[in-house]
Amino acid sequence: MGQMTEKISEIKSCVTRLLDWYRRNARDLPWRRDITPYRVWVSEIMLQQTRVEAVRPYYERFLKELPTIRDLAGADDRVLMKLWEGLGYYSRVRNMQKAARDICERFGGQMPGNYEDIRSLCGIGDYTAGAIASFAFGLPYPAVDGNVLRVMARLTGNGGDILNPSVRKQLTAAVEDILPNDVPAEFNQAMIEIGATVCKPNGVAGGPVCKGCPFETACQAHRMGRETELPVRVVKTRRREEDRTVFKLWSGDRCAVCRRPERGLLSGLYEFPNVKGHLSMEEALNTVRKMGFEPLQILPMARAEHVFSHLVWHLIGWSVRIGDVEPDETLPYQFFLQSDIKKRIPIPAAFAAYAGQNSWTDGTEPQERVMTGAGPADQQNGKTK
Ligand code: SF4
Image (cartoon, rainbow, N blue to C red; front, side, top):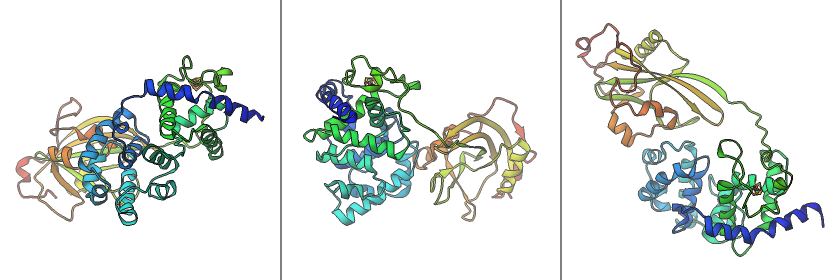
């Protein structure tokens, strides 16, 4: 028997113990109850890049608003973005809607019941297809997410770069080898669960807890004392850093927002006006004037940072009181009551530090208010050019 075959058969001999462990220790998660293909799909897309605890309220709200695939297919873009606000990676939900429309056209509004058709849908990769096929239809396909890759790299003692596609392929093949055909859903869930709660990532998550792990006797990494060295991740690209200045422009109790372009980062979502660079107060005032408004008072807001997968924004903010603004369709900005922004306007998490302000002085740095020369009396005749 080859070395790998031997390792696999040792790992396989622990699967019954793994399933017992899962039955005793599975967390009670909303998407594990009342399983349907749509519910599995929504939860799996939400759980990509997002923690379980953060997903819970979004999941409940999303299904309440859009209980069926047809509802998702027909949802208004702004409603959809609002339901996703704060989860980030908005292309995920846009792709879901494309897939939902495709399901309505090609499959009568029902999720297809075979792996190839599920995999053909927009935004559904190998992992999600495997999760839907196994959890909802009981089909014997692996669902290999980051948790499972980590567990498998440790179990087989694979020291290759886990971000390398050929290493991922080897690890996926190893999962396929141990997957029991009669209980694929339970097995996949158990592997994900053990990765999330026992064989945890190194660093802040605390690393693996090998004592009592159902794989303790068969795990190569544990045997070699290398469990905290694996898996290997070679991160090649550094995130680009960018300074930006955000403006909260207040006209009475209404604030300016604008829609981002249809393509690119955070496409189609709303944002507070912002520009590249960290602007001084003088520069900020000039920028507001260039936007077509006369600033009356200005105050600095807190600094914030937002990390995207490829980019880090270092944000500073200015809260600026401006005069009355008449509705003007030619302006790129629309003014909304703060309460409406909170309820209806999808503002991405990147601007979270500036979204909660309830008045123009809220959340600003405690220092003397700066008057800019123009007073309210100068602003009574509509838009302040
Ligand atoms: S024995 Fe340790 S390293 Fe191996 S699978 Fe279990 S928790 Fe992970």
